Structure formats: structure tokens, C-alpha cells
Image: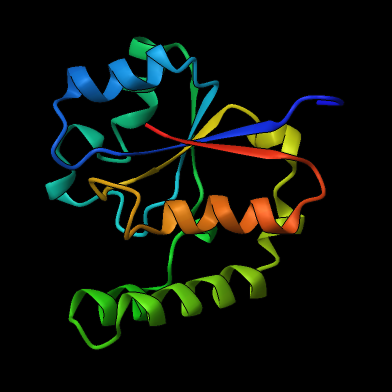
Length: 150
């Protein structure tokens, strides 16, 4: 990690087939999948349910899986956004405040997440906390960070 940028991948599963989803992870040479979802056990998650992901990522991609609820938005923030009670701009501010309060930039270490992939349900990164998390770490750490959305 001395002279190279830390590479953080992000991925969402909504709208993807299992073949496409796991293929993207494998093709990118992801080293670990870090699940950042608050509701990772929902029946709506299909192949991406928390109880199944450790098996799938190990067997299909050859990497480890880690569930990190501390990287997820709080229920209050997520529900307010999904119910259209707060705007995306308000969600961004509240989520960044939350992970800052949780001291995430100090808890996570660059070596620990180099070539790891933040997983969420959102189809794209545009209105997703996985992008906000990666950009937050990029702004907080002194090391160069490359963010790749799969």
C-alpha cells in the first residue's frame, strides 16, 4: 500500500442476474465483499440475502464476505428518504453525519478495504450510500483512493 492508491469497489444487485452480479465481482478481481445494507435479510434480496452471500461469494468469486451494519444508514434516515420525507441532499448530509459520528474513517483501515467491494441493493451508485461511504473515506484518509463502481 505504499505507492499505490487504495482501490474501493462498489456494487448493487438490484436489476442484475446472479450471473451478471457475480461475474462483475470476479472480473474486477475484488478481494472481499463488504455488505453495507441495513436490511440485508429481506426476501426482496433474492440471491443476495445475507445468509446466502458468504457461500456465493466464496464459491463463485473465491473471496470472503463481511457484513458491516455500522456502514449502513440508520433506519430513521433510510425510512425518511424512502418515504420521501427528506430529499436526497438531506439524506447525504444525515448519512455523512452518521458515519462521521460512528468514527468510520478511523475504524476502517485502508489496507483492510483495498480491493474490497461495498455491497448495497441500489441499482446504481448515484443515489446510494455506498458511493457516499467510498467518497467519505476518500476525503478523510491521507492516502490516495480510487473508487470503481461495478
